[in-house]
Length: 348
Image (cartoon, rainbow, N blue to C red; front, side):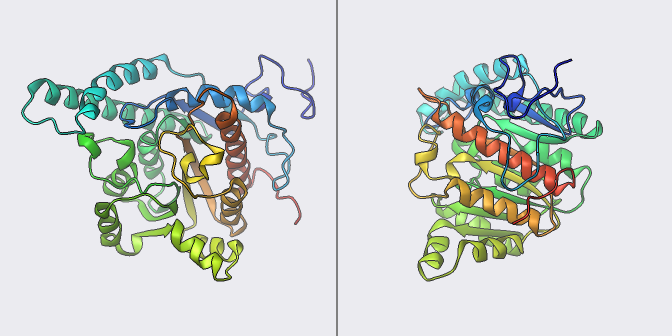
């Protein structure tokens, strides 16, 4: 048997990051969810998981923060073809709703299309919940790779079956707390509202990088009281202009989280130079190192990352978005495994 060499080039038939692990022997299992049914601006995120898998073979495995994060095993499951079939059918029907901006009036065919899309979204939520539950029952840590940002609700529901109290750290340009955007109950623009409404075990939501939002979302988040803290990008930027360090700001954000944390990462939380093909890019945003530093502070504080999702990577016509997505995914894996005591931290 050939011994795995972490310094060598990835074999063509290797798994995610060029690793030899299978889901059965991996400590962390990645669930691809090629779904973008309600995407209303740029598309392509359903191709994100496959593009990230291809790009991941170029990621060097040595990590400056975590010692050999590949050793506990990281494996990506194959895509379930049913999800692509559901997505294609739902996206075709959703396009008719999106074309009229959600104003379906009394048109019975549009009402039927909307009901069908909402039923498909509910089915996807159940599938994600059941798949997440299956791998949690097998003793694995689970990460999701989307797809648009609608995908993680089922995973949060599965986590809530095991944890009565956990927080969500949310990276995004958008608040994603709209109420059934364009009529879609399970919209990518409603994921955090759905999570707060449907998963009471989420006792704290900390949103970072938010810079594009509507008044409804501001009002909704304020009404949640201490359950929701929104770190608007303009406020973080102002505080840095006035002399606060990024490290101090991160420690303030981490202090607002409970011990157990799920990370939900919409890649458009980053500066769009890092993700130019994402569905809804917004000027401003985090550098990759700023985002991963914050995740690292979660771990260094002694908190535990229960799992994560990475969404809205759209490969576009080159490999750049997938390249960035693959590197962000590796850091999310590394910090998650370290938080669970499966890897040591590199000395500072």
